[in-house]
Length: 474
Image (cartoon, rainbow, N blue to C red; front, side):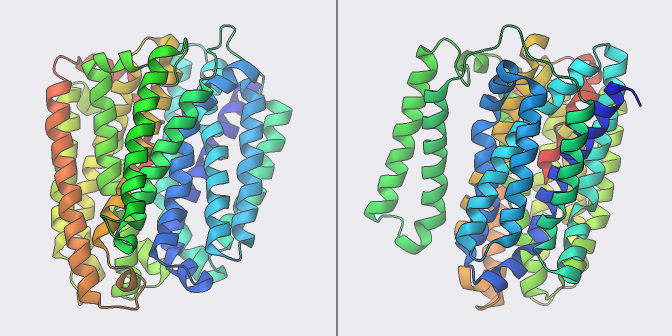
């Protein structure tokens, strides 16, 4: 097998590993809670520690790999992710697990940032690159589709630690193949690293999520919570000042003058902060209210994820006749409708009550992911494609982190863990779903306004590339 085919195989396998790791965790959370004695906040950090780490450093990792070499950074990311997976599996407390998940997020950021650049270097021709990206995108979609079921099956058969142990042989294979077969490449005129911007952005996002997660327990008007919100505003203000002063900013604010680029980020945050963020709570509903096993909960998601894959595959054909503006805004509207349909859930419902809402929302997700990613990449010159992908991934992961914390405000902690009133949990879930639907609806309106004039042929040309960013739908 040629070197570039090895590159495609290794990058696809590594990303599939990340994809599975994101998707399998949700179905294992009730077992993690029981085994480690974790509260709802601890479980929320299992999700948020990973997504926050990934969101805040993925753009910086893109600059680092341009300077140090893409293969070198890819190997470092793989190694950190694999070692952190072992730490997750061996964790004896929720605090240790959360810290290990943050380390996983850093490793994942390195891998995400490098993946597209490695494929672009290995497949320089437009036609060859489109074929490679199609394979890569299909691998991601398939991994996401089987993730909930795989997580449920592993958790039911071998315990929750097995979902992390699975990464050890996969990681070892990817590291060995990368060392032996993947060629090194780097950017001759790499951007400098904005360490100051990186630091204040990470601090601002951390303080915001921390305040949202602790607000119910400490009181929303308590000195500590108000101080954390004030710190968020201060850090984000400092971030804006830093980005205007440094020569190579982490996030060039001038990019947001382009309505298409801004629309892609608004859409990414809207879908991640609404539908993807509520997955944690719908999984807790299936397992702690309806008392499904982990594998049964995974099976409950399978029909809808299969529909999402078909919708995503149809996007290229749709893009030849329908504008990106229409596709994205309609997709977000479908997500909003799907979340409202999920409010049909009750304490004595059958598992299939989630299917109508999940199917409608995931049809929207399948249409949304490749289209919005194509707009994000196509709104900047090819020389900035890595920056465009990194920024879009930042908004996606930040949306999941903030959404998980914000929607959790409505969920009673004891009820979420099966120790309180199921009725209280369902009421809180319904409120979270309504708020999430409102966010998706606002995103639909905003993207419809921002994406005026975006040409459908740009989406068609970039559709295969756009599929590579669909992994954040977990």
